Each structure stands twice: as structure tokens, then as C-alpha cells.
Image 1 (cartoon, helix red, strand yellow):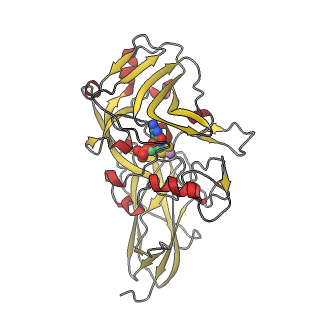
Image 2: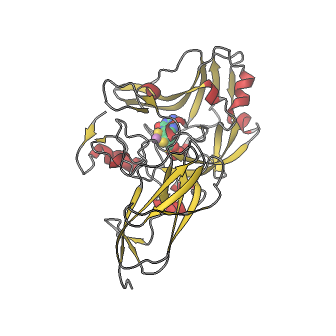
Image 3: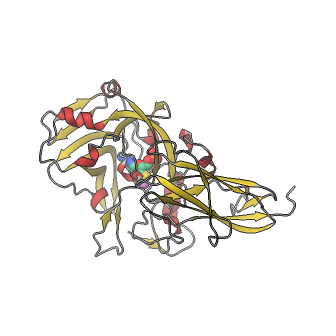
Length: 360
Ligand SMILES: Nc1nc2c(c(=O)[nH]1)N[C@H]1C(S)=C(S)[C@@H](COP(=O)(O)O)O[C@H]1N2
Ligand SMILES: [Mo]
């Protein structure tokens, strides 16, 4: 992993950022993110797939390997559920030194209404061997990363793969998956960071030994040092609240301009570990915090809407912040917590706001 101390981003980071877009934060106003506003992260190229020729293989340590067409998968029992997905690198660009990768600020999140068929019954039909340890999920996309040529493959413990909410998804917001979101089929692992949700799925392989592929063993680990720390795997999403920035933006600085008078701040909060229990807002940079009002979560694996009434907005400069706590007791740190890959950087969001006496 290369690092940068520079304020400005490199050409490589710009190239990544131009391909992989975030969800504009004003889209936090939607419970279900409209498809084109959902964030995108693609390590290599988006494959072009002929769905008539495409098959899903389920093989490895199973009694009856399966080969399934898209029609066969779609004829199976279907489940539709809203799932909040966030890239593990969300917040990475605020680290110093900064790992050179997709330079996310805060926008790498979205909530889709995903439709698919549960994976567990398929594993059951294939007859998973008693010695099974991990399941490898292979995408159709291929690239070179960290000097290693590879398919995009992620391993998952067999017990996690068997959880009833794990889906093989073929639709997003009522439409076939768009190419960039994994057409024709992706894995959906509610509560986990995005890297686990393998797109363009072509093969599911049951292993009777631990998976040792790049995306689990080299990438996506929490490490304190680049060289001599094996680290621990990145799994579920850390808790986070984000607000739709209030008022109107300055084109370049994105500083917000707000009028005098009452202002309702809206946002969403989520955690992959436990339900969201509390959201707090500060308008003075985190010195004083007030509880926001919580709505019902959009679904068991989807974010929880919240609102905060800022009743007496007076002229001045403000730093508006929000933070969440989940039922497991996790809270968000005030400042980014550094790790080599820049994963799960869930420091509180800070939005600079100017309130002018007369803004007409
Ligand atoms: N096959 C494949 N699956 C993939 C990826 C990829 O590059 N290739 N990127 C992963 C990462 S890092 C993230 S954050 C999510 C992003 O999903 P989205 O683009 O649908 O939002 O997909 C994951 N699944
Ligand atoms: Mo990601």
C-alpha cells in the first residue's frame, strides 16, 4: 500500500474517483436510494455479460454440484429487502497519511431494495460436506492488484454463508441489476461492508480448508503497520450517522449557506452490528450535543432515518456534526482512527455552515 501526505489527490486517485462515484449526500433524504444515486465501487472493469449464456456454478466440497441459469434462479423463492451497503473505505480520504486508493470522503453508502433468492437452500440442495470451512464467491471481473493478477474472489465462513438473510440478488429497486451493480447476479450479505457483496457472480465454491485469496488475506484487514501486522478481517459496518447538508452549497468549497429561522436537519444512521439506538447533533463543532428524533428503520438491515430541529438559527458560522450509537454500545470517534487500508473510518461528520443576516 502506498501513502500520501499531500493535501491534493494524485492522478491515480482522481482516475479511481472518476470511475467510482459516491451517493450525493442530499440523497440521504430518500429512504431507498434511487438506483443512479447509489454509490459504486469497481476494482477492475465492469464485465459485459450475455445472460443467456451465463451460468452460476456451485461446486467444491458438495455432494451434488449445481449449474444454474438466471431463469432457474429467478424461478426459485424470491425475497425483497432493503439493505444499506457501505464501502469499507468510506472516510478514507480524511486520513493522514492517506492510503492511496479510492479517495472516499463520506458518500460511499446507499440503500437498495434488493431482490434475490436465499443462498442457504441452494447450499442445502448441493449437500455441503461436513468438513466445509469457507465458501469462495468468484466474480467475472479480473485485474491486477498489489502486483497479483486475480479474479475478484471473496471467501466467507460457511456458517455466515448459511445465514437466512444472505441472498443471491438479481434485481435492484425492481429492475434487473444494472451492469455496474453486478448484472446478472451478486451476493448480498446484509450488515457487511461492500467488499463482501461480490458482483457478477459466476461461481460459488465450498472449501474444506480456509480461503487464502488476496481480497481476504492481503486486502480488507485492519492493520496498524503495513509490514509486520497480519491484522484482523474487515467484516460488518461500523456505526455511522450522516446528515443531508442543510441549506445550499457554495459551488467550489461546498460550504453551506443557510437562512435565519428554523431548520430541520435530516439524515440516516446505520450499523452492521446492532440496531441504531441514538443519534445526536451538535451545531458547535461537537462541544454540545442534542438528541435527534428517530424514525423506524427502513428495514432490519437498512438505515434508520432521523431528524433534528435546529430551532433558533442565528447569523454566524457553525460546524454542524452528527453521531450515532448502536445497541451494542458502539459510538463514533471525534477524529479518524488510522489503519493501513483506511477501513471503517467512521469519525463524526462535520459540515461548515454560514448563516447570513439577510440572504435574499
Ligand atoms: N466482482 C466484484 N464484486 C465487488 C467489487 C468488485 O470490484 N468486483 N467491489 C466490491 C466493493 S469494494 C464494494 S464497496 C461493493 C460496491 O457495490 P456497488 O457498486 O453495487 O455499490 O461491491 C463489491 N463487490
Ligand atoms: Mo468497497
